[in-house]
Image (cartoon, rainbow, N blue to C red; front, side, top):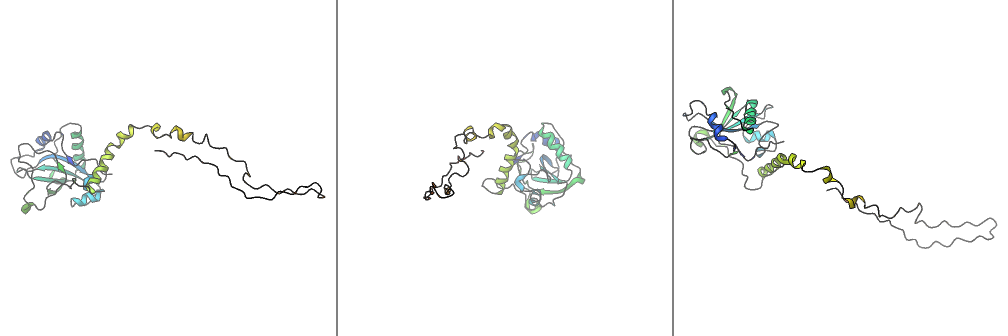
Length: 243
């Protein structure tokens, strides 16, 4: 299942996060200030990017590996948006878990773990690095086409996946608010059969068997001719289905 990463990420403590994650030589335009990060693994990935892990990888032009990736969203010294893909998933997972708990974590992956740097952000990031220009896409003449978040303003696959992720994120909480009693049959449905007519005895509704003459024929009364028979129907009370 897709992870529960919403359409906008990095909304909690991102400025403190970025201040601690600025690479050495931050004055250099090539240095990246990391704002936030998400996981892209078979077990957890941004659902807005695809219905499954391979589809989410294809949206970024990545090969779906078994170990997955970490996506780092940041800005260079000029404020341009960049997405750095790394294969050090445990490091990124530790950083994300620390940030979710309100703790600081300096996410500085080793250069050997970097897979590719992509211009733009594939998800909406609600913050920017302090002391840098407003986030903007790099020059397409130099960096190529930039990643952009899926359009979630109109109904489509992205909106459907976001809705599914939202339900998955809250389902456990919603389920705790319901007990077995909420799914029990209503009292009137349970007693619906109490007033039903008793079952007819075996053979009810069949025409009487013709009387047979006694030996000798004296005193025997012939059976009355069988007239038209109207079948009897038993009423059946409908049962109320479970909600």
